[in-house]
Amino acid sequence: MRAVAHNQSNDGFSLTLFPDQWEVLGVYLQPFELPQSQVLIEQNATDRSLYLIESGSLSVHYEDVKGRVRLAIVGAGSVVGEGAFFSHLPRNATVQAASTSKLWCLTPIRFAQLSNRHPGIALELAMALGSLVSRRLVNKPKRIAVT
Image (cartoon, rainbow, N blue to C red; front, side, top):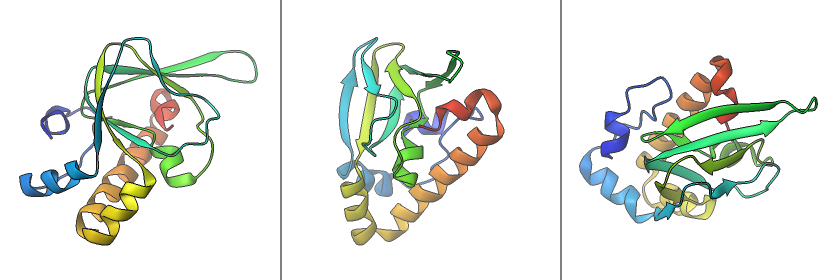
């Protein structure tokens, strides 16, 4: 909650919930630590989990058809994995920890449970993710961060 509130960048995850709603959402999230250099998401993988970044930073990169590597850095208070979460398509980039990071994972199954039990919170989450995807798509350097 604090990381989201403090990230005022264009790439910030603007999820506006009351503290009691954050507590409800937290029940559906799985916290974990990602050591520096560990890969979180592999390009072309078919999982659809979403990751909220509490601390640290993640490097997002892919190699295009000409062998060029594209890169974005995503930090605390933002999210990765939203592209496949919505699209059901394979991941379009690799994400790895640029520094040791604390993340919170939301799987599609847990999101479905959240949607059934707390539809207002699920709607706020979906709208905030949609807003983030839209901002990333108009920002050429951040387009790659839609994973």
